Image 1 (tube, rainbow over the protein chains, first blue to last red):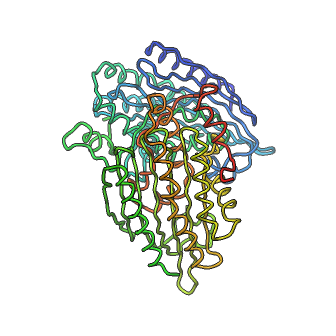
Image 2 (cartoon, rainbow over the protein chains, first blue to last red):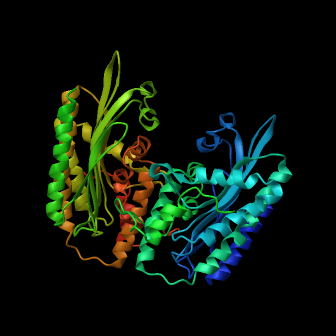
Length: 299
Length: 299
């Protein structure tokens, strides 16, 4: 495995995305380098209160440690206690305009080592879209872009990773998906390092083409208090998912990552209302009935 | 053990608190009875967008089931799979005025049963205060009220339960307590049922005397956008604690409780800002340096 090549790809990807998003917003990202006492660190790049993005975080981190934390070894108990390194780029964009979806993308590499044993490594990643208002055109575009990124690696990848995404980004206590999904994969080490790395590069590099056309189409739409209120309410679900279920968040908090960088995925503002229901026939109701359901968007 | 007497106390406590708070606010609580398919149910009483309370929830629930969920048996693996019943009153008040603290109170009873074995039961509960602005007088009053409630049960109770509260309501990823604490106890079944029940009654009945004088003192203070923004920011910490750490919340979500009733503890609105720090010398900074630290308030 070529750890340096992975690191170079990830830092380059972060830079390309930050440059492009900063250009669109007109406000520059703030850049924070941080390190952790146990080893490693990262670069958090954040834009708050921008023209287009109310909050945007694009993180690179590379942490290592002497003993794998429980959230990472839960499904692979044989690795408990091994030394490890984890690196990745993770981003969440919360645009101000409620017609522009929130988006998340992550690509990561993990390796656990032990003297006298072959290293265990895998890639993971994916991207998923969380719209506030229902535009079928956007959902189709996003899923087709995901499918395209995976096509060179076999026609079965997209359906498998699409379903994995639907299963993962699901709020059990609400019986509700987080958004309209995308793709998600983990534990990828087959057929070999080169192919797994190529697939992961393909997903990361497809992020801008998957998201920017949607952003461009919706960012100029006029909105009012009603749309902002619904956006704030739906962002509450985003908070619930990230704090209750998200493995990346829990791994980060448990492994002594930098809290402010990890929790950059949280929205700038969220609201909760007791037992709220959308008005029958409204676009808000349509989001629930036609978009927040597992559904094939790419065809 | 007299389960009916516990239930009667709890429903009476909920009613007394709701009546008093509704009178203060001027708006009536909404009342929702709910039941769960696996057995039991509850009564959620909620006030939203009131004159005094931006969100107030006072819940009674009594659930039973055939098999104890993992969050409840984690520390007592011998009970895994036993049938159980759990009942309690739980409240969180989020006042609108940032000078009035958020408060939480809970009293609960748990019993796990199995054919051919003596039932295992215990009481738990407590109350804790989360101020946004630093008033030593309020912190002292609240802690003294807690101490008074426990005094008939031995002078060592308050210091033990005060420390337990400090330990429990702690955000490890922030290295920060949720608020200024209060008291917390769990697994209480000594010396016997009658004494454990009496202590629990004492804590529940002390809630209004502990909180109302603070509410009355602060509810008329004038505030502006700055105070509301800090309140929204600090409420983000409340969300983090409840979704990442709170056992009651996780137990409720895992045991199929009613999600909207469980998550009534969340604030109506919360905000996150990247790497925000209070201004040196400000009241917001004083909250961090003098109040969000483990400290003896009752003396």
